[in-house]
Length: 479
Image (cartoon, rainbow, N blue to C red; front, side):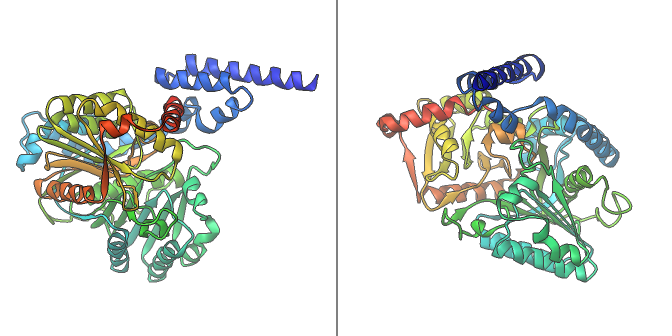
């Protein structure tokens, strides 16, 4: 009798959640259908999975205020610049920016992503180089250090970063460290792991403390030092990112930026810090936090933010616009390739139009479910002429696109539904043939240690692999 009551309660819960999905949440129809399949095919655990991974309805209450506050702050700080760049007769200073002006306007209109000139961009593809540069910037800090990362592991590298920050805090430098609760907890980090920093006078902020919710995590990787040096890309903070973890050698991508784009990285940190703590750093938005960096280089850069607090999907739409603008080549690297129909169609159309489209994913999975789903989506594109590769020299964690060797993006956003709709992300979009050539060259060097997935080899895959792909793909729209 008791079992019958429990089953009846589960059935009622599943029906309630099903009604919520269909009538209240305005989900993507494919995602809604996938959740309905889960709820009714796995009735004993379906509602638990929905509580952990679903619930778009609650994000409206959690993030609508954040969205409006962010928008007001952005307009107050950069209203004059917005009006200037919104003028359709405005002419950009570089030929690459002119060539991709529609992408620039798209990201300006739907994300307040202002184009900044006068930037120097340095590319890092190995953890040692990136963290050497980060430590050097921290040691040179004179006024403030702002770090925002999804994962800060309590391991050798993580403790070294915390120690370096604590030393600067003891010198009187303002230090603020923002991390995601779930990502950092998974790496063994907790408030106690940062006690050296807080004891020295540094501040920490914990984004979305509920570690039982997989969605709506802060996946950004940003560092700003003295408002003049910034970092953005795919590297978190931990030994894994130096190639010392179970996945072996680590291939990632990050930018070090000096110039006017650092102001936008700083602004991104301000907005996220305010959401977590209720305060903006310092007495005002200009003060010491937004110094005039001068012209450090010639690369135009936009800092683009995505997440559940954005009305549209700006990073995904930026990706699509770049693909649609390609005339010669599109090179993509991502650890997770689970695109929706709009991205798949853009890649297929580009390939069928004669553009050299190449996608690189890891040869080994850190999340097997996503890996098998990625292979299934790769298989769909091979018929259209897209070329695909598995990176064999360790784990590929880079999240990049470069188009025609002239424009592209580097940041935290993977090519999957989680990055496009469910997590907070930040990417740098650039328009510069020199930077594009360097990023394309890094991709081509990776081809030497990669294996191409040909149409013939894909069709010859074993039946067990086909089964894994089918099951993984069925549930890939969940979220």
